[in-house]
Image (cartoon, rainbow, N blue to C red; front, side, top):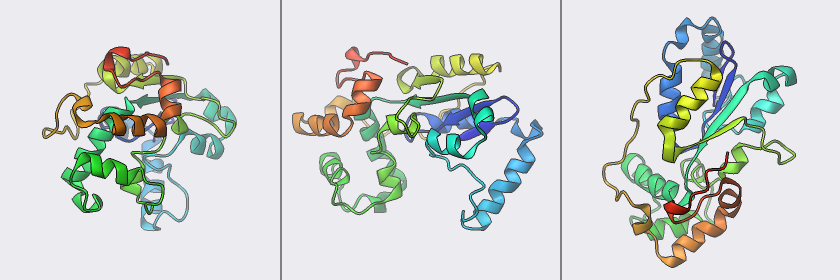
Length: 226
């Protein structure tokens, strides 16, 4: 999550949706923001305390955390936005990210199908780096009443275009998006990773995301709702 008091925006960072690139682009020149230094100090204090003093919104916090913590009038004034991604493609991206950067979290499952079945097993012990990639994306967008409270939902599939639109609504020039954490060891078409059974497994787990966000297994069938 990235909060700018000066520019009145709140970026909700859903894992594996291009958020690292968005954060990097928006953070350029933040040191010129008069609010940067007190926010930086609070962040460091939180880190030094082991995050026991609740002075920092976590990177992958849901929008409800900000709504509950920030003054209501201030929260309502913020332009709140997030990016989402096709759930099947997201699972392929997550697998390659973990295999490349945190292979000890694979649980001994080197094959995508085996890993997917294992990570979606409700009996598996919780592990942050695995579980952030199987949380429903819509959970990041709603308040305690289940209402979507973000103002703009961009899509990873058109990241550049939607990022430019978000910046237009913020009222800032759109900085260039850096290419962060690109996987070079995966097939481009995520569909090649799935069998009918594993595709259905993802469809069941992310049923609400698929319904609300309009995604389909076939990329030609994406319904660009926002």
